[in-house]
Length: 386
Ligand SMILES: [Zn+2]
Ligand SMILES: [Zn+2]
Image (cartoon, rainbow, N blue to C red; front, side, top):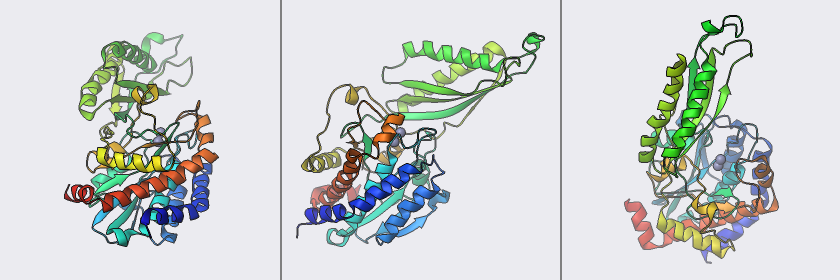
């Protein structure tokens, strides 16, 4: 029996369970590093399929590593399952988790025939933006020995090599001095004004950065009452650039805007975090070509041009994996337009029939990609050698 139809049939047999897993995670959204139920459910699904599952690896309570097979080519599948604050699974990580489980179950059934080992890495905290789960898991050895890493990510369209850029997330805290805002304003140091100056400076900076750079953020604390001069103001910001190297040039310029706020007002500035940035994703072209062929054989159509491909940019800690291990991170379409990622409307789309179809197609396409890599002598040799 040819392996590909066999594996596809196996995954399709499991589709009801996979969809139920996806919907259950979706119905119980948990933010980064708090995915206790979600990680347990994904781990249990793999355990039930004969995987050796170790929960809480790398000193991360919501991470796991699940292994099956003893072949010489080690395929890694990344399962994300964190949600976004306030808007639930608006990035569709429920689909990522379920498609990784489906691919793993299908691939494990033929692992011996292929001389392959399958490892599913439960990678928490992708949306946190600094020191994400994959970064910590790489540092702590969870990816050691993996020759190729794969995942699919839901989006409005299928895109083979989405632009996934480097990103640094950090907190900014200004400390001023409280005072009665009307009676003794001259005794106050206004921390919120420092933030206003910084935001104005960043707005002006945008004229003089690369068109591919991004700077954006939110105010997380702006004061306590209008009649108290704000003694404390805080913000969480992200700076992004095409590569880690370009990000290194951008970050000090953004920091100087925050220093400007401190200088103008006399508030003290503290910048916290941002030391473990997300790297850009380096798509492994030969593996992408294999994935694309397989996804197209399942009837999926890829978007190759237009603003959604050329202008859109996001970031992921899969970038850090991809700079260490040959990786793919294609987008899989869930037919959500006009809803796009990180909108509550997109969250609603992540449990539709199109989303369920995407998770099954994604699982099959990933498993087929692994089969092709394992059986193509030159692709395989290139990865095992690397
Ligand atoms: Zn997201
Ligand atoms: Zn995401």
